[in-house]
Length: 343
Image (tube, rainbow, N blue to C red; front, side):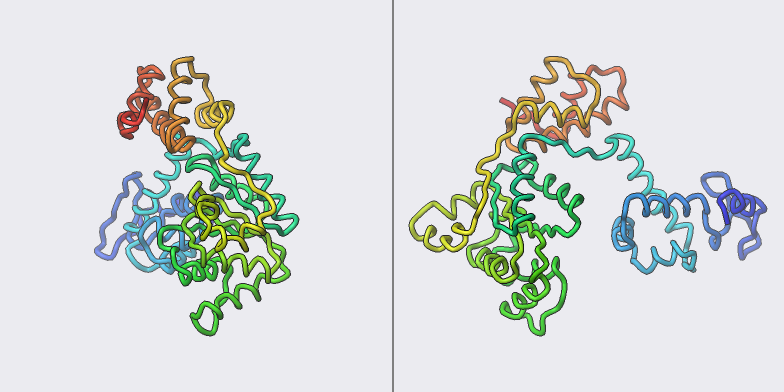
């Protein structure tokens, strides 16, 4: 049934169980057991275009996957109006964000080129590589874009909870798949090796500075036995712990000696900043605005600072067209409390 036919049916005024009729916010007459066909079509189209899974959509409206599956297939028998309110809110958030930010654009900055070289080299040759760069320089964004172009790529993101050997192995199991017979480190490692051996896939370890020596040794073993490519993306802590003293040098020697390619302390160039600014706000900025944004890019957070700032700037300019660009940037900076770090 198409949307127009469904809307004509709704306008006939199907009666509710108590004999009355109910009008929704759009002025259509409906009951709790009828679907808003237009909203249903919008939601289905959004899921297809965004690539959102049932589980992701369910999380975004704080509902169960089974409920969303039932709604998609028009098999849900509960309070349809209530779930449609949640879906309407979700679509409004997503569409407002899309209108404000526009389509996501990957910027080929000098930093991303250097990172990409390491990823591609290790992918094609099944080698081990490392990229050392500060937070906000584009490591994770470049890795995600590389994965979009090379779908077999695996990205494992470490964090403060992966500072133990068991946590590192569980993280690998979650991304590689498969269940070992037991939860011992040995069984988990054997399972991962078995699944990846001969696959020639690339494993990217993002935020690798959170992984301790023992965890990195496990990844080295996986690299040796499975014959896959491995790239560590991390901050300077990763490099420092490998080279800072004699004891650490001995511990990390097996790992460090396998690193075939590295990009050390990747920096943000001025043209990189211009490129990112252009992707987020296509209109030309004046000299004062560009100077302001270049200063932001030199602070901790680097390109991420600019991204957050210009996202909010776009919303402020849209809602307050009377403001100048500099005034809107100042408003965004103040709201985000970034001005305290400005030199």
